[in-house]
Image (cartoon, rainbow, N blue to C red; front, top):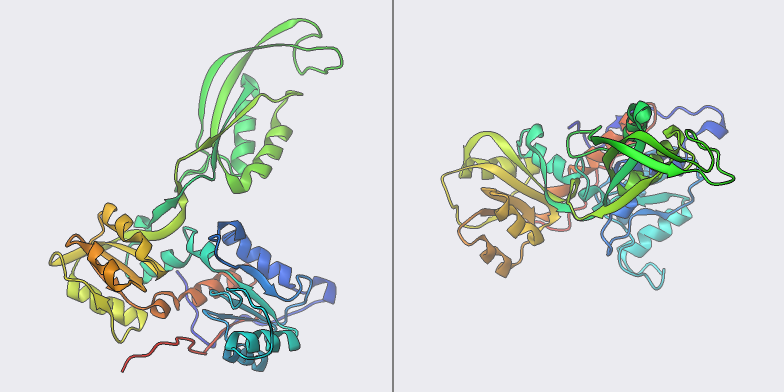
Amino acid sequence: MPSVAPGNWVGKCTFGVMENALKVRDIAACLEAWAPRHLAESYDNVGLLVGEPSQVVKGVMVSLDCTEEVVREAIASECNMIVSHHPLIFKGIKRLNGSTDAERAIMLAIQQGMALYAIHTNLDNVLTGVNHQLAHVLGCAPHTHEILRPMAGGLEKWTVFVPTDHAESVRHAMADAGAGHIGKYDHCSFAASGTGSFRALEGATPFVGALGEIHRESEIRLEMVVRSEVTGAVYTALQDAHPYEEVALDRVSLENGRKDLGAGMVGELPAPMAWQDFVDRAKQVLGCTHVKITAPTQPNVQRVACCGGSGAFLIEDAKRAGADVYVTSDIKYHEYFQAEGQILLLDVGHYESEWQTSGLIASKLKEKFPNFAVRLSTTRTNPVSFR
């Protein structure tokens, strides 16, 4: 996964006429195509928090947190939009009088005409998001990455009946719109042949058959899985490709977990590693001066589970996944007992588990807008230090 060093410019800001200038809505659309807002947890606050979608963007600063110091850094760097992982406005704010860092940061951003955008738990819940980056940094082979707790729901099975000669064109149209995507595979479908029957009534314009007569047609029963976020596109594609005036379609909600969405990540190191060497490696790559661990359960580790940020809620999932070690942060005292001699728990600190998210976000923006100015904040926002 590419990363960007803090403070480095990614591309240069090049504007044509004002009508074609990059706007806040363009940055938001890029990020939300990657991590849709509806994937955020119910308690979260993501998306555009301050600013207007139509505002022209001169430059974007990316940071893990949005603090008053980060806002001042953005102003000095001539960036008028900040994209942060943690939302500045999280709990309810009843007044803006500058009594807290959050209030001062919001007031300063508004005064300077700066847009503030947050991409938080929605980025935690996508396959290529925060936890993918953490697993990569910890040394897990990319092809082994899997969601630790797949998201429930969000899947439908569509069954459509198509004339045999049109089955392939309908199948391809639905697949191109996003149907049939299961884990690391796409264009997945099942087909069975049979005979359909119908009678066209007055006012109908049937593709085959005659008005008022029972018609039997050789048809294919086509089944495909459809993810919630592409149902609209798939339905439009199906209607456009299907030859019948009235399309026979069954839609059934599934309880299957989403293999491409959910919390945490589990992966495999290329080879077993002594547990102490793994802990030392984690400290080095994550910039930890200290970590908290439970008693080691075996000499070596290879299967690694992880969750950026506060991840104690996934300890049991990590155990069920057969992980040798679980890397996360903010584990409370009594939660360490859940290890039960089955897994090594490694608490690396909240900031340490997520700081590389900024580089991940910046790389995504650079990929979409290669000629636009994106800057990583150099402000260290970690409020915790060790002595």
